Length: 292
Image (cartoon, rainbow, N blue to C red; front, top):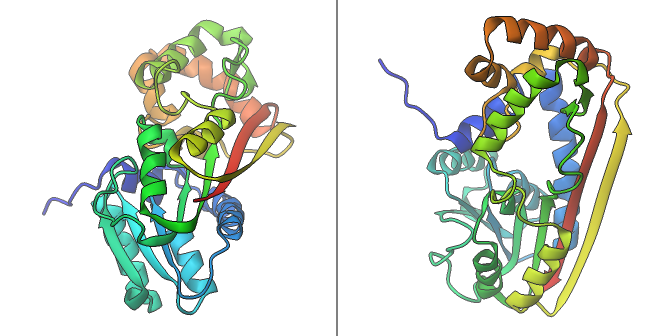
C-alpha cells in the first residue's frame, strides 16, 4: 500500500526542520514557545474574542490562545490541507473543537473570512513566504473589527546578507571555498536573494506596509543577535535539517551538486567546525503589533 505524500509545508514543520534530532526539536520548540507567548502578549487577547491565526502551521499560536483562555475562539488558517487536518486532530484530542474553526486560505487572499469579523490576527514566520505582502496586510486590516489588533513575528533574513564569501552557515570555509560556492549557488538558485519573498523586506518595510494598509497604531521591536557559537552541534542533525520548506537539506544539496570526492573534502573540513561550535550565529527577527 502506498503511503499518501504530505505537502512540503507539513513535511517540513513536522519532520524536516528538526533533522531527526530529538534534542534539536526540543530546543526549537522551547524557542518557538517564547515567540508564541510574545505574539499573544502583543495581541492583548480578551475573553470572548475571535483570533484568526494566518499560516497557523502546526497550531502553535492558536492552541496557546485556547489554553490560556476559556471563551476565545480560534480560526486556524493555512494553505496546507495536511496541516489543517493535523491541527483539527490536536483540537479534538485537547477538547477544543467547539472553539475552533479551520479555513484553507493564503495570507494574501482571506476572502473566506468576512470583513470586520475577527478581533485579532496573528502570524508567525508567514510573510517570508508571501510575495504579495501588501495584499496580505490589506487582508489583515479588512478582516479585523474596528479596534482589532494585529500581532506578527517575522525573521529578517536580509540582515547580514550577503555574508562574507568565505563563510558557510557561519563557519570559515575559505580552505574549501570553491566547493562551498557550489552548495551556496544551489540554494540561491532555488531562492534568488534579489527576488525571493524570504529576502525582499526588512523591518522598515513591515512598518510601511502596516501603515499603508490603514493601521492607526504601529509598533515594532527588532531583535538582532550576533553570537560566537560555543555549544557543540550535532553534525547529523545539521546535515539532515532543511532550513525552510522550499530548499533541500545540506545532505541533499551536496548530493545534487558535489562529486563524491568534493563531498568528502567538504565534510572533512566543515564537520569539525560544526561539532566544536567554531562558527558565528547571526540573526534578526521582528515583532510588529498594530491596531486598526
